[in-house]
Image (tube, rainbow, N blue to C red; front, side, top):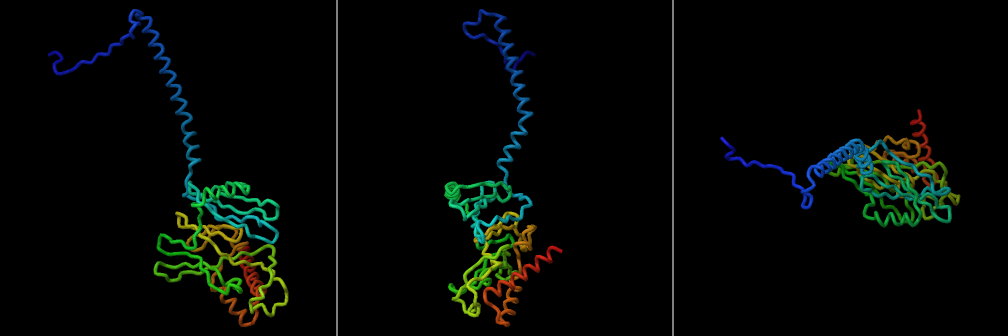
Length: 309
C-alpha cells in the first residue's frame, strides 16, 4: 500500500565540510569519542548519585528551621561582676527561627566582654565590643521581646507593672505576669523571682517611710522581682528573659517548664501568695526592705527544699 500519509524521516550522518573525503576512518574516531563521552557522563552521574545525599543533608543542616523546637527550656548565665547579676540580656530572632541571646560576660575588666548563645542550637559566640555593636546594628529590626503576647486561643499573657512612688518603689510589688482570657477576665497572676547565691549590698532607701525604723545603712538583698520580656513561639510556648539579669526561660501557656532552674534559682509563685505574706508582715509592722526580703527568701528556700525531696 506504500507509505501514503506518512513522512519517513531518515537520519544521515554527514561529515563536516572538508572532511567528506576522510571516509570510515574519521567516522570511527568520532564514534569512539562519543562512546568515551558517554562513559565519562555515566561516571559523573554515578558520583552525583553517591554524594548527592551528603550535599542535600549538609544544605538542610545549614538551613534548618525552627520549629520543630528541641527540648531546650532555659539558660542561666554567669554573673558579670562580683555581687552584680546585671548582664543585661538582649534577644534577636534569626532567619532560621532560632534566637541569638546576647549578654555582658564581665563588667570588672577594662574592656567589657560580651557573649552570645543561639537558644535552640546551643551554639556560642564571643563578641568584641565592635562586633557586638555591629551585630546589633545589623539585627536592630530583629530584636525580640514584648510586654504582651497573644495566644492562639485569644488568651493574653502580659507583664504587669504597678505604678508606685518613683522615690519609694515597693521591692516586690511592682512586677508580675497576668494571664487573661479574650474577654479580659484574669486567669492567673504569677511572679518571677530570682534567689541570689550571694546577697547584693544595696544602700537603704531613706525616702521610704517603711525604712524609718531600720538602723543599718545597707540592705542585703537576696531576692529579686523580675521584669520579663516575652517572646511567643510557634508551638504556643514562650520565652521570658530577665531584662535586668542573667537568665532566659521557656514556659508553656500554663507557666510550666522543664527547666531545672525553676525552684533552684528561679521561682514562679502565685501573686496571691506574696500578697498574703505582705499582709501578715504589715500586721506585725515588719515591712522594711530587709524584713520583706528575708521573709521572701525563707519562703523560696522552703520551695527549693520541697522540690529536692
